[in-house]
Length: 338
Image (cartoon, rainbow, N blue to C red; front, side):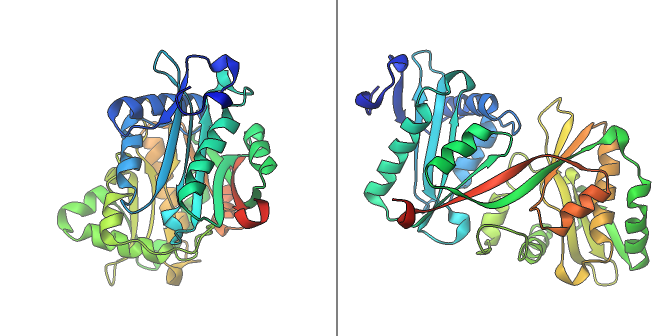
């Protein structure tokens, strides 16, 4: 292997450990690896390209891939500044290994390589990572290296074949009685040239107390337009906005990421309500409207996740969602473990 032949398992003869190249061939190869290693969270080359291009230019990352002679990637690791934390000393780790190549030491090889490269040029005090409870080997890998569970977010699914619209009718009626109307974003855009700014202000308000590993450092309008609004998975016809009719204020949002062609499942982006309008049925009205639309569009399932103490989890359960696994956010105190 090109970078570190001494650390190469004998079964990897002919493969090479190399830097990731941000171009179409590597984005396509990375998407193929991702869909094999993490099929619960499907992606595309276009989405991978967007992730790379939307990363702030002043955020430092190192990426390495394991490539076979046939050009297929069998492993990937990246470690770098978690720019969303607002702290340059907080890094984030992301790794994948092809299922057919696990238990051969590839994870250790990839981890050690990006760690040594990062440590050689940067001082970081904390590293975060995320996996699923349904991936026990990944949890074991991280725990063995000193990572500890920092946050747990149950993943819940709604079988639309069992959806009962009456579950959300109380919320719809309650919101309407208070002068709250639910609009599809696609219908609002033609008559609202400032819709991106309105969306940005609303998003900032609802995210202030959404559970997270890091305090929300805020996002500029330019960054917000780049992501999430600029994501290839963003689609205005899959977003719904709650508006206070008396003032025209945007007070809540829900919606789904754009699914892959032929997909039967929708993934929720975020459901949130301005703090002054919570406990008024707005979230229920938003989610019920979106669920009814998903049924009408012929989808079979909706997936979402919430921090385990977030009241939104209880709302989802009341609407018929059932938890299947959980996202597990891990954290490593570097000074204590190294």
